[in-house]
Amino acid sequence: MEQPGGAMEPESLPAGRERPIGRGPKVRAAVLSATLAELAETGYAGLTVDNVAQRAGVHKTTVYRRWKDREALVLDALTEQVAADIPIPDTHAVETDLRELARSLVRMLTSPADRAVTIAMFSDAARVPEIGDVKRRFFADRFLRAEPVVTRAVERGELPAGTDPAELLKTLIAPIYLRLLITAEPVDETTADHAAQVALAAARAGALHPAGRERPSPAAGRSR
Amino acid sequence: MEQPGGAMEPESLPAGRERPIGRGPKVRAAVLSATLAELAETGYAGLTVDNVAQRAGVHKTTVYRRWKDREALVLDALTEQVAADIPIPDTHAVETDLRELARSLVRMLTSPADRAVTIAMFSDAARVPEIGDVKRRFFADRFLRAEPVVTRAVERGELPAGTDPAELLKTLIAPIYLRLLITAEPVDETTADHAAQVALAAARAGALHPAGRERPSPAAGRSR
Image 1 (cartoon, rainbow over the protein chains, first blue to last red):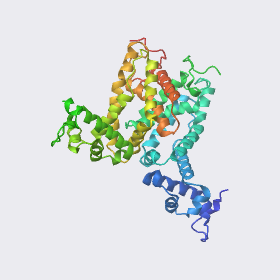
Image 2 (tube, rainbow over the protein chains, first blue to last red):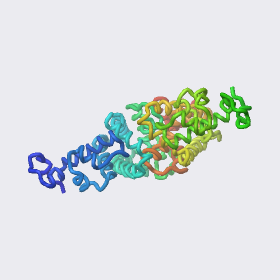
Image 3 (cartoon, chains in turn green, red):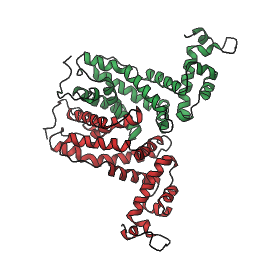
């Protein structure tokens, strides 16, 4: 699908109706980076494919060939950015895995550039209904990527069998987003570590099963 | 301080430079209600004391006599509204108290009128720096009002001594706000009950002590 040649030497090729840069991985990176910059600058409501293309230095048709609309573009840009900023840890212990996930999230959300993107996404949610779709798909993807942190912990007997990965991950990130966007408190590494501790305690108590079905025993998952 | 006479029969009194309605509890209610309506309609960024006064049918000076600025007005309006919508329960059991608190919050946040206010507050947070102050003071007040739910539970031996009320309350509300405003998922009574269960499990495990200081024993607070 990709044409690396086009991406490797886009400037040196003779200009045609469609420049090879339009199909290389380099253009993908340029367009996604331009999307984030536009998001941070103008918000979701003001973002247009035209402006993204212009900022990336590509034709609008080049953008539309890869992304069917603004939503697809934003979803892809956010997903790639967050995948880079929040790698999925594998420290062989659930406590340190959760702490690393939470710390990466805090680092990302408090870095000026990403913070602007985050705020833009949430600020415009009221005015742009389709942003809900983007957010749902974005988080579904994130939870799926991080799922191994939970399944491995269950396999190691650190968490009760049946612990719901998405529930645990939501419990982990909820207090961080709450402080950042709802109660307007500072977030730092302590917030992250505390979030990991709370999520772990709830999971060990069996409170993070699907649909919140409680398991009365506080003893953790030797039961698989 | 209040002049009930003025509030009881405002329309029938002869008009003066300052109408008695301006000092009665009725004007307070009218102004706060107009503030919420303006918030829902125009957002925080667009809200002006002028428009609030006009909507409430009072002079601007009447508003300024009670509230020094837009922030004080919005803080007061939100605080009163939420105090009415989310009474502090006292069911003599921490589990049902927390469940009631969470259910009231879900009911409030999903009612169309209050939902509009909530979204306005969070949507404009990026554009209006002082909104951070309003949110911090609003939540500090809320947590203080709900504190007895936690202190009574500790007194009854249902929660470990030293459980931090604000930490517990934040753990309780975090997944509700997360779903409503961040991951864009539906929230309902099940969300509320699950949130109560998770917060309770974390508190019983000793994970909700000030600054997240962990208590290793999962046994709950017989230690007071």
